[in-house]
Amino acid sequence: MQANGAVPDRDPEVSSRNGTQNGDSSAAGAAHSNGLVSATNNGNPVSNNNGVSAQPASNNINNSSGDINCGVKKKKRLSQSEEDVIRLIGQHLHDLGLNQTVDLLMQESGCRLEHPSATKFRNHVMEGEWDKAESDLNELKALMHSPTAIVRMKFLLLQQKYLEYLEDGKVLEALQVLRAELTPLKYNTERIHILSGYLMCSHAEDLRAKADWEGKGTVSRTKLLDKLQTYLPPSVMLPPRRLQTLLKQAVELQRERCLYHNTKLDSGLDSVSLLLDHGCSRKQFPCYTQQILTEHCNEVWFCKFSNDGTKLATGSKDTTVIIWHVDMETRQVKLMKTLEGHAYGVSYLAWSPDDAYLIACGPDDCSELWLWNVQTGELRTKMSQSHEDSLTSVAWNPDGKRFITGGQRGQFYQCDLDGNLLDSWEGIRVQCLWCLGDGRTVLASDTHQRIRGYNFEDLTDRNIVQEDHPIMSFTVSKNGRLALLNVATQGVHLWDLQDRVLVRKYQGVTQGFYTIHSCFGGHNEDFIASGSEDHKVYIWHRRSELPIAELTGHTRTVNCVSWNPVLPGLLASASDDGTIRIWGPAPFLDVQDADGLNDCCSMDS
Image (cartoon, rainbow, N blue to C red; front, side, top):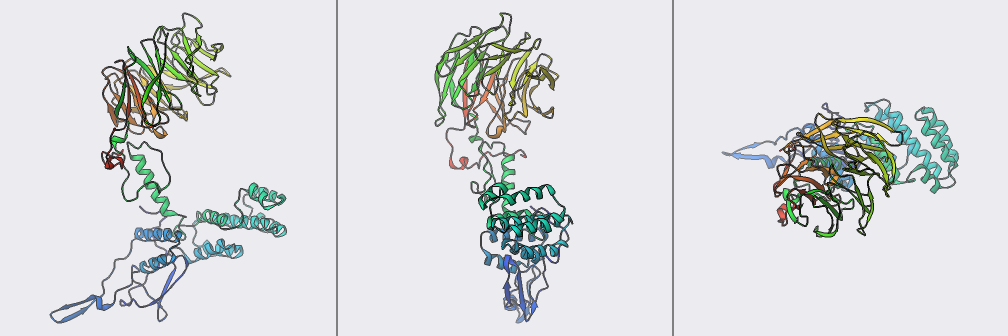
């Protein structure tokens, strides 16, 4: 990997290497700060083509048939990428405080960590010698690609100088910097006005708080230097902590390409090994049946984990809703309570944002909606506006005080927790509903093969998604950006709601005209799961159209899947076979599998 900003034409000021001096390696070397090295032999520079000190001639004597042939082994000239690597290593060692090692590395390789002018500039900034640092800018000007960068750098220097004067109580000197040095630059006048306001700060703590500044010293000057380095070509001064940045990028890229990566992303390098490529095993993924729940006695139409992940609700044709408790340690699911009396069966469930309430809806011919208190198991509200209604879908407002419900017979209501009608929208044949995080917009799929956005406050609506086939159900990602649709005869489609474009069509699933509910899941919602009419559960990585797992075990159509929002390794599926399956990682992982060395796949494989 080549460092950003590397230029094909080498700057002789950056990488100076002279010819071999007859293999003489006894020259005395003087090590400069940051690895700048000069070696002399009677006053003349000494280094090999690649900077490696030549071995004494005696080490290269070949004795053949009594003839002694003296020769020095020539080293190849370092390539640009090799120089870049040496400089990256040198910078990292320098950050660790191994300055003597850096000096030896630079001396032996013949490379230079940074330009001498850059080294002077760095030292003057860190020592707070602002006049000298400003003078250094004139030397650096010829090495920079952008002429305007000098003005920006000078502004940053003078800003630090001004703040340090203020902190030291030298108000007159600070005012002089502001008037005679910063203002004439005619750069960022808005910032100059803000800086002038700091003159009114009564003490140093007030200044640091208002300026969001660490105060005079190493911390603020290091941050300043990091900003200044962004204006300098990497051939002159490397960007700060460049090797660490490249390593982090490599680790992140490997994680992104890992199909089964389902753990929290740690941006640090301490949590990973740099000695091995990253790879997660399929055995660590929720592909294995952990439990089969058989308490329902008929088709199970819906399942949904609570928002805190501690409960699972399932609805069935057997007229009951079962609330299950999820043990967050053992990941075992146990029956908590059964809610009865849904004469038409339960085809849809929605948890309130705080998980205190659960709303249950029935199939198309059901005109009633049940709102249950989850903790007590008591029915708070049984709502029915008309016996001719069809209330098949529901969505909670983010405030937890209102909900939206509707169905295919043209009902579209907004109600409070007691079932009182707050607003209604006539003539909308609703198939599925979702409330966005703004608390105003309601998404509804209808019988016109589309999803529209409705605003109950100003009574406006707009088209967002248009499909060519009926939308049987949909769900929305946590950030409200993506929608996952189950489309009749087509399968699972991913839409970008903001750009209003179809992002991806996922392959494999069998979708006819049954209502099947899919879901987002895993850490960062990187995965998508869906039931299927071929009795399987399909899982895709969000960026891959082909399934990464096909889960078998159910014997009839899988109607619904739900991914635990807190435990990314726990998945539930509900089927017409009357069972709910709880899926998790393989029950036993050997050490090698746990390290992700087996069965690892990437999106490139």
